Length: 329
Image 1 (cartoon, rainbow, N blue to C red):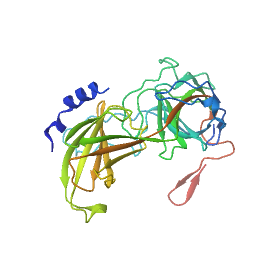
Image 2 (image 1 turned 90 degrees about the vertical axis):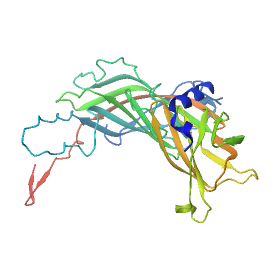
Image 3 (image 1 turned 180 degrees about the horizontal axis):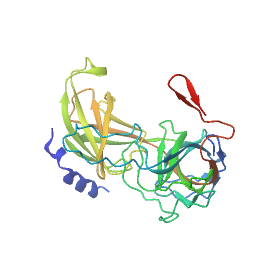
Image 4 (image 1 turned 180 degrees about the vertical axis):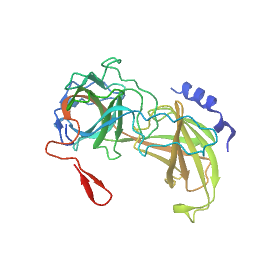
């Protein structure tokens, strides 16, 4: 493995030199388009209507009890771990659907909550600024998990989930929760290809991409898996700060213009430094890196205002089936 691959500090320095009910529908109003990180055409020129926003899930979770004290001489038992490690508090997940446009990202750091309370006037934003939404570096697959908002976009680009979280629970007698705020959605239009030639896969900077990257050879490997029959290959790592959500495809191109067989073999994060791993179907020291990115990015603000119920829908009775087929209602 190339020795510099283990020097995270060196890589960071190099990068710094580069530069209701489940079906409750919500009316979303599109505000004036804001300037995106890339040239935008403007949402006002689009004949498509605003995205459809609906409630996908409401989750209420109390904090898990702390582990009890160890009793001297007692048999050691593993701690209880809930199957789904739900975040304590109130989490409301929304489904954002847009069949006519491609959702490139939803910006948690720009989304705002202006009201989050129940029908017993319990303020679920208490202790936080109403518009607070902290952004933090996250993995390439999932956007930041800190702050009130989290978001994840389906690879197809036509729907996304957005969750607003409060560490507080509604009143025990509450029946409904109200949410008001804004979502900031980035739409991708068209695509274009940029290419950086003669990239040294042992160690090099890639500056043709929207965010600078460092490429580094990790190891060579024998033919295996879907690449069986190929005379060995090379695994490289791409290091970068931020998210690759704006990149549709990364291809490695040989000197004769042929695209080298490659597959993404994983990704990870080390603080603010993210990495993606690619296995190339042949051993190569230098090649061109071809990146497909959106031709234009436009940003739209969706205003949301919704009220959703807590618990089971009206008319539905709770039943508990006990051993012996007895049912308690």
